[in-house]
Length: 237
Image 1 (spheres, rainbow, N blue to C red):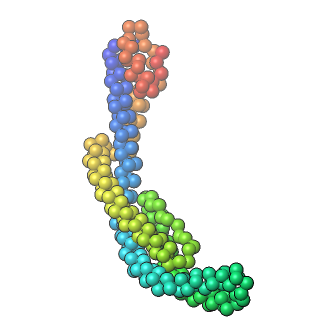
Image 2 (image 1 turned 120 degrees about the vertical axis):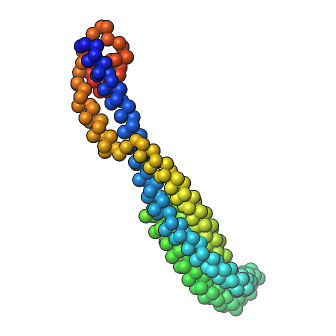
Image 3 (image 1 turned 45 degrees about the vertical axis):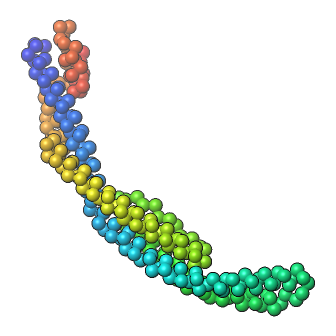
């Protein structure tokens, strides 16, 4: 192979290598841009849904606090009636009246906790709304599961914890959307300089078509020439 021909092939090989790096970067940016654009598009809706959830939980928590206060005397009466029942049994007395009192007190508590059950249903609705909003989005939010404790104080703690999750997640989603928007802008700017990946791929295929599949180099050929040709996919003998 004449030196001029080898020089031309090496130049082509170098162009192929540069274009491969350019294409790889463009494809990476395109993938990242698609994800960031998805985040930017989803952030407003998901953030708004989480904010609505936090707002919806506030009156629920207040109502549960009121029920907690109202049910306190009923629970105390139930506990006291049960204790009197135990004392009567331990003393060998007839526990019948105490059993009746304890049962009546229990029924009062159960009746009062029907309202608490309603608040739990409202909490579950909010939780489900949060799960739906996050589930179809690119955001990962760990939403705590619901409990089964019938006490209003327990339900209130769950409501407050869920409200904290909603508030923190809404803030995180907004920040993620802003960061993704900045990355997307940077990616578009860099891609405008690199070129469209499809166009780069066509150009690369055209350049590769101009390279032979195999070449035989003479002993006087520079070692670097063989290395560059091999990196471009040419078999060197």
